Image (cartoon, rainbow, N blue to C red):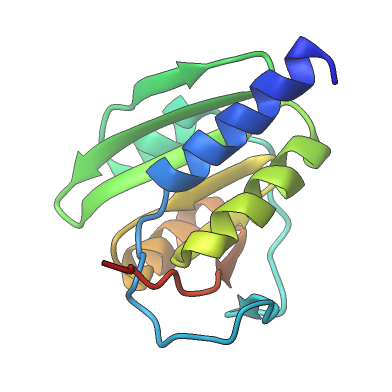
Length: 144
């Protein structure tokens, strides 16, 4: 495995943990259950930057990961904290989503970008501005 591939894998795992905006907010599902699609149809979306996503939210992004494969960051608005990621390639986005869905939550997924927020309705409002589709991951159950 190349250093870039290892870096991408680590970044995806860290990003999944960071962007788990709604962990535990949905009923538990059996392990291995396919993610639910909240919306089967997605309006066409263009690729956007973290800064453009933040502007649509109404906040200023703080970028926390700046890598060749992806950028991650977040910001806060009146509706809560948002986390966002943009990807250099579709494959990177698919890998990131596969890892992130394990932790549950709701994701607004566009063309090489993903946004999470504590409340699904905040993502629905953002969807009206940016497009994309709402996607729900499996619920992560915290074990003590």
